Length: 349
Image 1 (cartoon, one colour):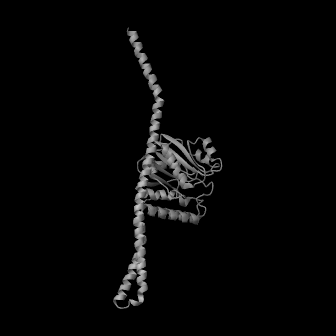
Image 2 (tube, one colour):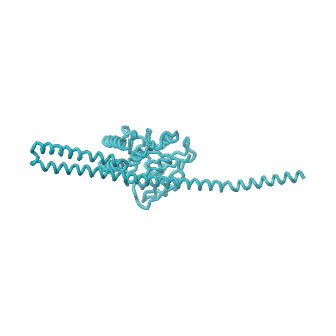
């Protein structure tokens, strides 16, 4: 069982070594632990620090592309290097590395394919009162959109099995935390949460440039992800309001027309027709979006098979390497055995 711990990095030279030093070198149920960083176009000595420390794999971007793309590049890098379990953590050492064992245990036990570390939001001192409430609200919204019971949706401390990682695909450029949960829930990937601890804040979060900016972006991501994975349901809900209003106004006009008072209410007829048309067109957009979602699922399956082929190719190369390493020993053993047989025959003679 091989575990790769990935860390997205952007100008983290001053604090990366401290985060790496806390990472575990041995875990129960894990045979091999390797480390991977994603250099998201850093302008400082982040790569040099990682290489000096002994990080096994480095994924480099020539320019800054954002947390979401860095996360996906890290996943691809882990899969290409034969990871059975992938753990994602932050370079600012926000999360306690001692909790990695707790994080991967549900995967080892076969209970889940994605595990989210739930931080003690209310006990975190550097979180403001407003931020705590917004974190709670955001997690509630993600639970409703994804049909999961994730307690801390914005948490970046998470573990994934190889199968789950092969299905994940993030399309927004801002953050991976919310969209991956919605996708996992809608794709029937087993998701669970475990309580984890956090370390004191070293630097302010770069994702929170402003609290309201973060809220606005997060809500757009949640809504977009929900519309992407449940478009027909979403647009059906949106079409109900204009349809019901249009039908209500139309019934009122027909009633007035039936009692001979319809001449002064032609505007109501026009408004009713407009609302009904708007509702119908919204529903048709939902149908078209549902067809597009079907195509997206086909592309997602194609991506899964490509990742599976890359993993199988990696395992084949590893097997060939092991065979090549053992071949000289096998040949030497055969030579020794032949020599021993010849000596026995000579002694008998």
